[in-house]
Length: 385
Image (cartoon, rainbow, N blue to C red; front, side, top):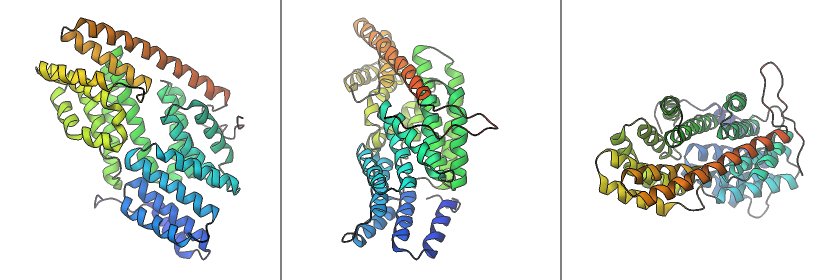
């Protein structure tokens, strides 16, 4: 960890609460929450040691609150270790345990995190259901649940190219994260905002748009996210930001810099949960190689990228990969591949646009409305189904 990293306010509060708590179950829940913070920051060995100790201590006399916390933290370890799909199952278990035990605030937190997983898995029904549940249950001072839920609303609107609707939710999420003293959530906000700017820049590069304007926003966001993580000592998922920088360099025409970043960090990115994006990365590496005069390498990576496109890729990622390959194979004189990938790109892009429209309509129907400065947002919304 960076030696300059400040002492976390959240960690300090948890340490103080643990020191003065005499109730065994309350202390165990706080210890689990502390382990979760460490896991989200990337300190997995220390987090696992604490979890193992809690498992041993409660093996013969399980308590629902402790069990729910252990499931949640195990989910975080899987997510922040490798973006594993198994994290979602752990969080579903945490949600079920907390709901059965009537632990509303823990259910709110697990529901908010499940919403984030639903968002990543394009499960729109689950996303809306868990967001509304989290915001309905979370007390005004449940900053952890509200920060995560507000972030997911913001990310969803940002994904839909509706920054006008996303921005107020980003603001609310950051306010709750600051109130909680949770640097890992602030880090997640920075990273995800930057990631969206990168995606929009790449989409503009292949489908048309303000490429350099989007790239400048992406570059500023990546710089902010990297500096913040260096400052607070975030160690988890450390290959993700270099891959963002590679994409930014590519759309800015800095092909040598982009290729060097891709080659250095691609394998780590795959191991940290981005294997489904291999096709995107290989296609862009091929694009860089062509512009650097390596036609053989460009053709090789281009064909490898085409082979890597499968159903695990989100449709917007499929669209940008096909579009990049269509442009590449056109430059390489492979007309049949240019036409085929170009057609697939347009098909996937149309499906992506339709999903964006569906998501906005679903959020509007669920009354996940935009926060307006000067008035309380409509956070307490009805639960669907």
